[in-house]
Length: 319
Ligand code: 45D
View (tube, rainbow, N blue to C red):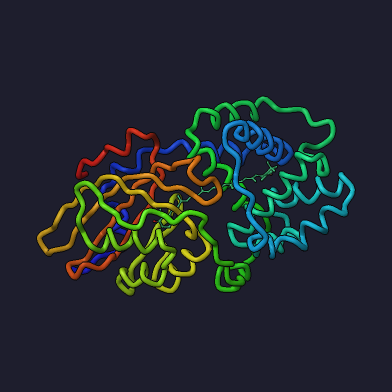
């Protein structure tokens, strides 16, 4: 039997309980640019009372350093202008440079700007800024999310900024610096209800940042679909993606369900918690993996979904 990515996307389709995140991002996108910047600042400082990101470290900043220095030299109004252009995705030299950054470099860039804002060296909100009623609605909605969802909203906002030229596709980016784990991730994985070697080996490889081993578990036309994104197809593209976005993750799958089909293929759903090196053990993201394993035991497709609530961890019904 042959599979298509399209048909694979709909396995365990009851997993995609409408998450609040796309709706909140849609509301956020409708705000004025000053409202968006102010909102991120308020959300970030509000979260900082309970959870703060870990400093990115020198290696992560190497690509952002020059841009940050340039911004530091600017008068306040110029700094604000740069931030507006980033948020508006304007076609400016700085916004283009930012567009070339990898996800982690974008996060590191804003982390540093945030530090400068806390120190009062960069202004966080435009002078004379008046909060519009829309900001409060979005801010309240963000406050109601769990921490794993809050950091996803912040991350998506950061990733969406900057001028997105065709040339800035991942093939043209410099290799992501290697992330050094402070503490090793769990290496011996057991998942209640799932014994499939491809799944267990996948998690163990990811927890060791061994992306070469991880992609070898896929079929050559296999695909990986990150949360809220389109599938990434083929081992090479998946490996590149993992190198940029999956380093240092702690994956802690807990339970799952496995259905074997007549042709010997398997549909497996696993739920559990993932931690990002940006927040370490302080923030757990509740997620699901939906695997389609071919009869030869290779991964044809895996989707990663952010769960709408922790109760969803136990939603392991077949459909
Ligand atoms: O504009 O199995 C200021 C895959 C001012 C791989 C600011 C995965 C104004 C396969 C506040 C300073 C990767 C898919 C801005 C699994 C302003 C796989 C700054 C899943 C912008 C499981 C804001 C992994 C700042 C997952 C500094 C789900 C914001 C990983 C910083 C998820 C935000 C990781 C940060 C997430 C957010 C990381 C650091 C959600 C980090 C989020």
